[in-house]
Every structure is written in C-alpha cells, then in structure tokens.
Amino acid sequence: MNRTINTGIVGYGKSAKFFHVPLLKAAEGFTVRSILQRNKSDSKLDFPDARLVRDMKDLLKDDQLDLVIITSPNAVHFEQAFAALNAGKHVVVEKPFTVTSVEAKKLIKLASDNKLILTIFQNRRWDGDFLTLKEVIESGRLGKIVEFESTYNRFRNQLIDHAWKEKEVPGSGILYDLSPHLIDQTLMLFGLPGKIYADISAQRGGDADDRFDLMLFYPDIKVMLRAGMLVPEDTPRFILRGTKGSFIKYGLDPQERDLANGISPKNKDWGKEPQENWGALYIESDGDLKKENVETRPGNYPFFYEELRNSILNKCEPPVLPQTGMHIIQIIEKAVESNEGEKAIDF
Image (tube, rainbow, N blue to C red; front, side, top):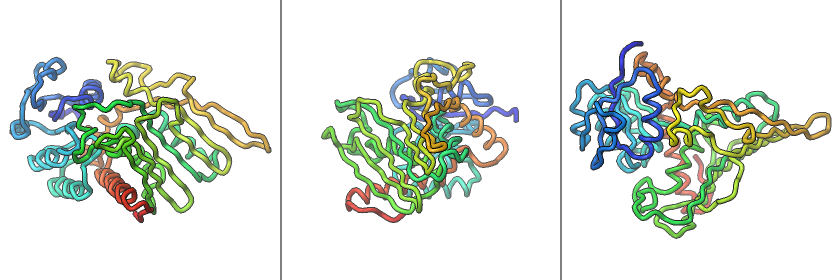
C-alpha cells in the first residue's frame, strides 16, 4: 500500500483547480506527474515539477503514468477516456461520464477488457447533507418513504458568451451539468426508476437548456429533481416525506465553497456545516407534530481519492461504478425523449 500512483490531469479549469487539485494534494499516495493544458501554463504554479504537455498523445507517451483524470468539456470525455484506457491507464472522468450511453458502454467494455479502473467523480455522494439524509431514511423515523424532492438552483440571468456549457454543443446545458448529481444521489437511495417524465427549457433564451423538472417514478415513491438558473430565493435542497413525517434541508454543502477559497481538506473542521443550516425533522408523536433539528454530518469529498487509491492498489471496486455513470446518461437520454414527446417514458 506504499506505492505512489503517478497521475496525469487533463484540463485545468474550475473542476481541476477547485476540486481535484486540492483533493489530490491532501490525499496520500498520489503524485501529479503530467498536466495537459492546451494554451495556458498556470498549472505550473500548483505543480512546478510536473510535465506540462499540449496534447493527449504526448501525455500518454509516459509509461510511468498510472492514472489519468479527465476534467475537459463533456463532448471530449469519451475520446480522451478511450485513449487513456487504450494506453493502459486507470481513468477518472468528471461527471457527466459521457454524452451518450453508447459511449459509456464502449468505455466500460474497454476498461474491463484491459483490467483497468474506470470511475466517475460524483463528489456529491459525499455531501454532508446527503449523508445525513441517508441516515434519516435508514433510521426509519419517517416511516415508509413516499416522496423525495431534490433541488439545485442558481441565479444567473445573463448568458456567458464564451461558456461552452451555454452553447449548442454535445453535453451542454443544465441537464448534463447538474442532473448527474441529483440522479446519482437518487439511484443510491432508491435504485433504478420504472418511468421518467421531464420538462426541460431554456428560460433565458439561450442555445442550451437552463431549467429542468425531472420526475422519476418508483412503485411506491415519487421523485422530483429540479434545477434552474433563474431562482434567486432560497429553496429547500431536500424534501423527504414519509408516512410518519418529513425532513427538510436548506443550503448547500460547504465543501465546494471551501475548496474554492483555498481551505485545505486537512483542516480539522473540514466539511462541517453551521448549525443554522441544519435540517429539520417533522415527526408525528402521540398525535402531536414535533420539530427537531438534525445535525448535519461532516461532508467527505477526500473519501473519493482514498477509495480510488485502494481500488487501484488492491484491484477492487472503484468509488463510483462506471455502470452507475452509464445509467445516469441513460436517464438523461430518456429525459430528453420525454421532453420532446411530452409524455412519460419507460426506463
């Protein structure tokens, strides 16, 4: 377990700088050996000893490279992951895994054939509020769960001209950007749905979608996943309803903000949420409805790289199965089909 995993990073935008770089620096057993930046060279500020390259072929020439982390735009996830797996490297792909489920299946097969680790960075599995929500469900205090609503809203009423996520390109738009977080969490809680219904639109008049309502139907549970770019007010992050009460949670996990502000995951208070953001449990007891604040568990993004190191060195399951990433893309494809046909689609 003492071997260092030589790592290459593909792309050096927000995802790399605010998530992967600080998590890699805090993790044990990873050495960033190579970085692919097409034009800029600011990665040298973080990793002055790393090799800076300008194309994928040059990055993959390094026989000592064990792992490639892909943080590029969604449209090139497949070709870059395919090239890395074909070169015998383990691969981490930023969410969303790929643009199509056909691409996802090809990557899964190639990784399996080459006996390589392939995983997706679904960091919000380790949000403190989600970990707390799972505990609430597992406690049974809400009784039988009947409804779940998960919302990830923002407010940005102006389009950004140079942002590829707001252009008409494969994998752009809020559905590909934010729904993978919400879908992944839902699959962890309830498994695969039976039917899907989606309402997707571009409220700001841009080329890419900027709002969605995605309903997932289970035999006894209705799930609503929502995100929009024109929501300035506070809305609940989670609403969970059961036969004995509800759990409601406002606010976002603080880890992304802290990473962007340069706070190290090694900080002793890492992932802790202020008490004013704790969720509320509404429980019926002896005919009375009682409110109880629930302390939010500390979030744990560093766990992803701890588990990845273990999976590479011990040849066991990765922190996020690529099959789950494929299911997320399949649900997104069904959501697009549902929106176009204005009807629910069997999954």
